[in-house]
Amino acid sequence: MDKTRCIDILLFDDLNILDVAGPVQAFSSANDDGVNRYQLRYVSLDGGAVTSSCGLRLQADQRLKIEAHYDLLIPGGRGVDCMLQQPELQEILNDWHDSSSDRRVISVCSGALILADAGLLDGRSATTHWGRAAVVRNLFPKVNWATDALYKIDDRIFTSAGVTSGIDLALEIIRRDHGSAVALSVARELVVYLKRSGGQNQFADILEAQFTEDRELARLISALHDNPGEEWTLELMADVAGLTSRTLVRRFSAKTGHSPVKFLERYRVKRASDALTNGVPIGKSIEVAGFKDFQQMQRAFKRQLGTTVGGYAAKFSK
Image 1 (cartoon, rainbow, N blue to C red):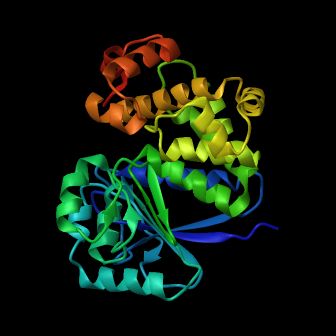
Image 2 (image 1 turned 180 degrees about the vertical axis):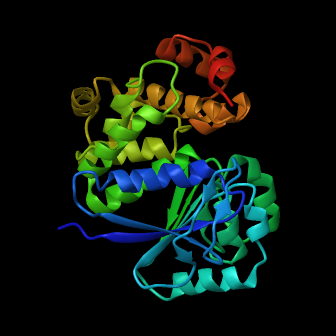
């Protein structure tokens, strides 16, 4: 039987409700087949109710305190700044992390600032919302900030870039805890909430490929994910996968319906479109997705989405 992971979700005034709703829905959906894989509990500093930035009132189950076997998830939002420089919270976070080798701390969006403020991210790789990039590098220079990444995992510290990337991180945690089949089942359910220019299955092939059980393809897909801007050639892809070019093309096409090169283009378009949807400027989206320049991204958008970059941004960006 799968082990149940217990997660406390920290609530505070002016949090971003999507930073909470996205990840916890993913964890909750992992239980939909009747297996109790995740037990969720909502806590606040005083055990009382809070008001999110959109005005939704949230009631905590209890006061934040250290308990054995509980992970902690910290969302982001405007209220993060008021949570900084609080000795009580800093002490709890440090004790939380140090008192158990199995306990994990997870942040979504600007929630990473709370972890950094407590010193938990010193010397570690972490990410946060791109809009906070300049601020966090100035305030917390001991952290290895990777603000272009959707999420970063460093030992038992998990950070994500914000909103939809909180779901990405939750899916990765589910995959690590309970395997690819459970994670893919959750991802297929939640994909309907993604904002797309076409049908809801626009990038279903990419989603499924990320959870492949084929070790060689998984190694390559992981490398493409980590370094989309690499000068990828078929030969380099084959070398990373540990396969011949011919074998790679055959197995990759059988799995995804696309050649590795075409898959990379689709993946870059997916990253760029997600970035644009979340309000990232076009110039930054080019970098995040790994395109060399605007013209390369423009051609890819026309081929994959049947629209221009500007047309997509005008219709779907925040």
